[in-house]
Image (cartoon, rainbow, N blue to C red; front, side):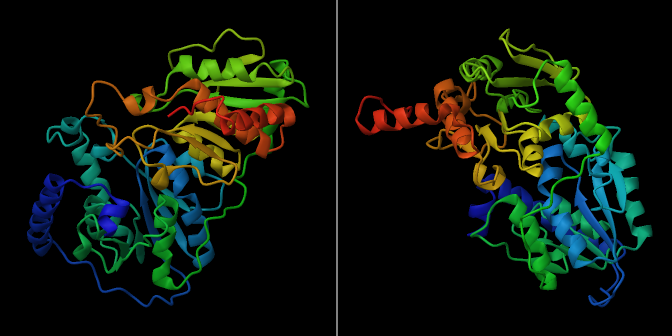
Length: 411
């Protein structure tokens, strides 16, 4: 039941996992066995947390790290993190040490490139994992429900390894937990790991910290763009690391055009510094290409973010900035924004979801079928809820029209 609720594993993939698990049992019998766990009551611990994937995944683990700090206030917490992303959590008081690593299967989208045995990534990766044994951590956590992570936990030589076995490799853990099927979001899956210590978990987090300098710089940028202090600022981020998750610049532009009918509203069109594309030529639509720290500060000043299922969606949640997110290939029950003011735009009838970004069709129809009008309706609803009265009459009229049969639904 847990495997069908929290993972989507085909029979073929499960057979491969079982074969890999059988191989690991032989390999582990030949390697040095991790020591027996020490007392869980020790005041001071050295703790390893593994989250070496992408920016959005790192944002999802923030509530767990904050609760972990509360659970073990005197512990030294180290985070195994994707190289280049450690600066994201610096200064937050969540992690004492960052252990950057490049894991081969996270660096490429192609299945062949992920596991290419001739890749130059493998040797430094294996050295990095093996060096974890020298650190003699007391506890190690992974919430990914992945046999690969469980094997890395075992290789780290940590005596107490906490994780999930539903994706295989449960025998590699000392504390193989059962996930809470009523709370399938990945934030809650991570938080459930603290159940092994009887800790009362909570998904609520304190405001993410920004330096005063970055906020001053962000406000100065808005002034430079000609945005007055009392204006409503809406962020639009049309990008996503994975192409199959991009709804399309032209569709986002249609939403921005509709929004800008409000003369007190300004749109910030976020683009990566080296990304292709330009902002639409609309009055009060400002193209911004920012370094990461400045982007976070400017994002925190937005009243709403309209985006794809992407890293910026999760970042906005850390600042309690409401989100309207367009979802295609992934499951929002697992990865979607969780705020009461957030909205997800999705075609729920797509039977192939989640496909984990390996689309079986010639194009992602789950995204192509979503119209700008559908997204705009969600944007209007969000703006009404968060206190922008401009669209209040519009959304009331549309609801009355739907009720009286003057409009058909978008499905």
